[in-house]
Image 1 (spheres, rainbow, N blue to C red):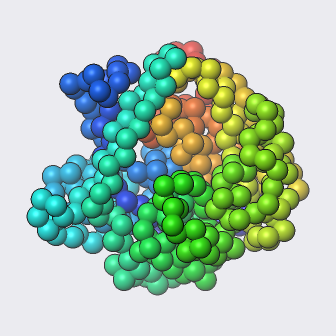
Image 2: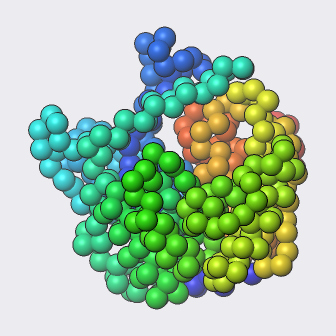
Length: 358
């Protein structure tokens, strides 16, 4: 088991850059739509939503554009998800100044796959700095059980890379467990390979939990491994297992490695699986067919369920099962995060029980 700090104000803390997701209704494509649903979004708060909806104390470290209606929407959304937030407010600086990112995404339908367009120019979260927060108060006096970091946020800018490094260093010094979802994005890394490679390697060196597929481990951490992917889901599973031996040798503090396994039959029908390594033991959720309303956020839901199981002190096999089902739950929502009513709802998904509950 992973020993979790007992006396802590927060179960989970996530640093992030918040934005809004704009989605056409009824699975329609963006270029033909006239109506759009707007939701606050970020990968890291997607992860944290599992814990917050199930009653654990969560804190979000982020930045806002001062007096922006989009910032007000985001703040209201975080409160509705039972999340506490903290962070600086920056002046917009005119119409060409700062703003919250826009993520324009349709969910696809049938054989028409989803398409996502990111508009991140002037993103306020790129400016986040360690000087904006009292980390000794947060990790030393108040206490945090798990700090969750994402490679998407760490790679967003030189400032956020440094911010994540300082968070990891401080958390590690105070005995907080660290979760790191590598989340490689080629467009974020272009021209910054050396800078980000060094930052990611240091964060991984103090992490207890690493999430990513074999390609993430190779591209983010520079590890040698088998060719990415392999043939089908079984090939991906074999590649991941081979890679973990290398990860363990390079990063001995890591005790948990996990990834999801997905095969897309069509936009609304996927095979969904997962694999987890804890110590010398392997736990596997064999791929099963799931119905998909919107695939975005399924991976984040998996990580959120995995961390929730660890926070609750369950057995490793249950971490994987709850993560698998939390990811499957997220794909049934129009938001890109799951909103579980209770633990039983998620365990019912794992057991395949879709009967009416009265």
